[in-house]
Image 1 (cartoon, rainbow, N blue to C red):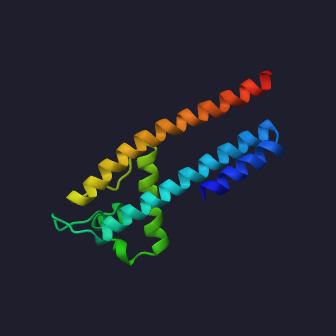
Image 2: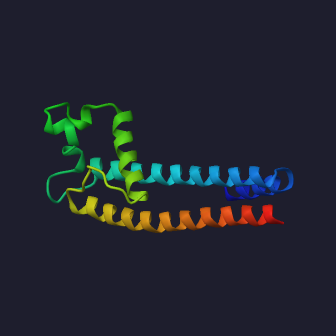
Image 3: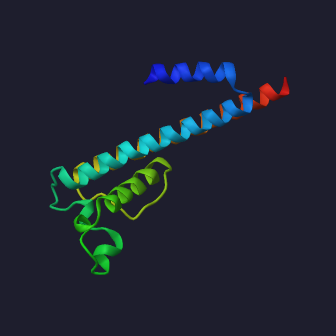
Length: 143
């Protein structure tokens, strides 16, 4: 996979303008963000549905309006909805935002803390990479 990325970067370097390369770089960063969010969402869902619970509860037991308003159980909802809730949680962790899904046992808390640390490092790296890409673009235009 990395070899393919390297080859594509070389092709882009030879055949694309500076503006197109910047757009390509930004799109690839966006794809990395989506992939990291997907992996974190899958991990969060797996922990919430299959990991041992020392409290007898899981985050899937306390899903916002579903349980508060007497709606359907989270497990009975569609897989797409369950995935989107997990994806929403993961995106919130990467962006260091807040979300109404909270850990309810030790394994979930471990993943939660690690996801927050990952989000902090990932967010800092992303800002740095975007800044560097924009500065490279500005320097190329200046010349």
